[in-house]
Length: 122
Image 1 (cartoon, rainbow, N blue to C red):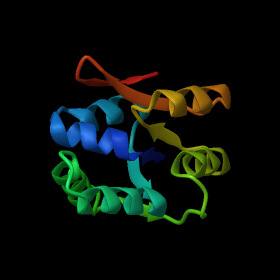
Image 2 (cartoon, one colour):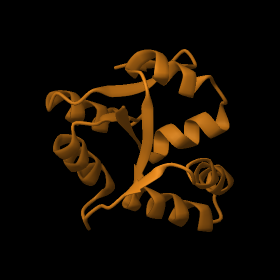
Image 3 (cartoon, rainbow, N blue to C red):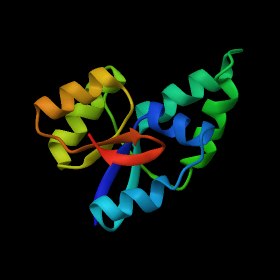
Image 4 (tube, one colour):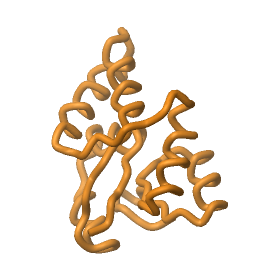
């Protein structure tokens, strides 16, 4: 079973634009253990509380991820915590954040994103 760590950008995107994302991921990596970091949950909670256009999307993303494994994280920046967790656990990361993708790929972490509405390895 492969742990796939989701960041807020990926979760919010699949909430806004429903896709066959889960089936796509299973097709790419096999049996999946979906996970989020505690700091990602906190980030989504902060976004959901603000009076912004994306507040509703963040709230839906939180609901969407409620059955995922929540992994502990440190006190660093969310992206740094994602990189640290991915390196420590050898998990795959699902993100749409270009800078995070670059950082992860430079460290040889498997990264999944969306291309043309479908999940693809980046």
